[in-house]
Image (cartoon, rainbow over all chains, first blue to last red; front, side, top):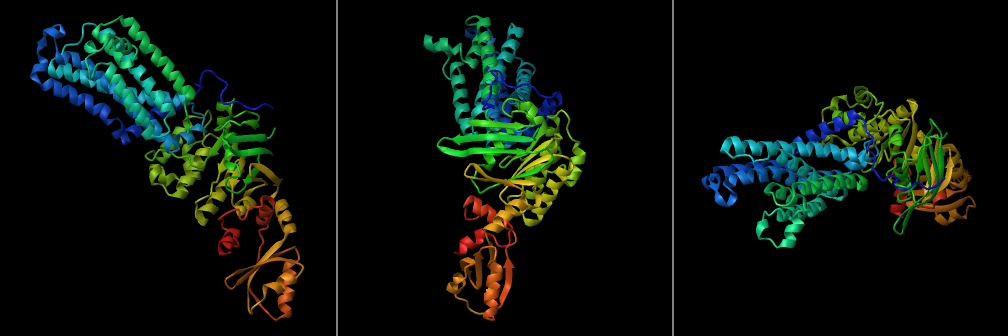
Length: 259
Length: 318
């Protein structure tokens, strides 16, 4: 008999009972509800920000430098996206690292549940939370404070979905490997700050050197913001986001550590 | 086809060899024990069987399947209770069972499992609030939730009080009664003797003996016997040691512990009778599986177990 090798497959195992996936999603949603602190910042911060921006009168006035749009108009999509960034780089990796640290994943590892199924279930729960938060932000901005939606809502929606999946896939990669909640934070937070930086949160993209602007198109949050601002080709940014999603998710399922 | 087949298994972590060369077969329907001191390679072996680790060399088969290659198929038929594995603190007992049940193609009935493992009252209790014994019962119930054909129980009774330990033994017998093959990892002699059809003694990453508990005990008995008593009058060690049957004498306060060959008990009793000394509270060590273990592994003591004349205790007094 020959020695069995670690994993002969290029693609990770995906087989899972349908009932298993549904029960896993339901259970993880329940556990998240019982431990709301994990997702709290990802929900509360974007909602708080849109309210603050909404009540500042100056932000509701059209500005020539923004092409006749208001500051609030510009920030509605940014804050809608913020929940995805926060949960992808904090809630998602921290929740997995915590399960890993406590030996919960060790127990799951000897059950038939595949790593891909586990990751997908948690992403489903986190993405639903992020999407609900984004919907709340848009609703508060538009209905509560009279913000107007961008001209091309379809492109907006596509970039939001692909952007969220790209960010979550990157967060999944950290989730797949981080041995503890501390390490998850140590990798998640800098990745998040890097994404903020290349999205022009700290320094406006317009005032960045050319080389940094070019890089920004290949960083998930940067690519999203570029799509919205109409700089560069939208299809190119969406392709970048799709690539992050596919490569990140597959790599995460492939390298997933149960312990 | 054996339920479990381990052939020339080898596993190293860096410079440390956890398993040097381990082979054994477990027949279907057997309760097979793996016994050995801490660090002998028991858990690594179990982790290779469960598919948590891949062997560096050698092969592992569960019902003919390779846990590394046929991951899903092996897990559908293999139930595992592992050390250091946990559930989320806030999951409820029933939720945990329903979650794990949902992963299997033919799961057991959760309500029946709750009743069988006396967890019905605790169905809505959170895992974090359970006692050690309740957690252990849930761990076994979870190992059984997929209606497995083979179950691995790793140190099932470690950390349990004597009462809970006996309950756990009854659980293992219930598992076997359901027709399931059991691989039981333990470092308690008494447990192996009481439950196992056959036992493999593992030491320093190798199998040193595989036999029935009675067979191993006979080996231990041949290696010698031991008695412990409180003499009614002082006895000189040297006089006892002068007896050809005696190999060692130890003092534990007022007590003497005398070890020797299979004739030692008769010889010492006769010696004391000649001097009109009474051996009060005389205890003859019955559990000679203990001796077999020591003779085979050359380790001072196997356990902090419930054994009446545990050698670990005497080590401390020495």
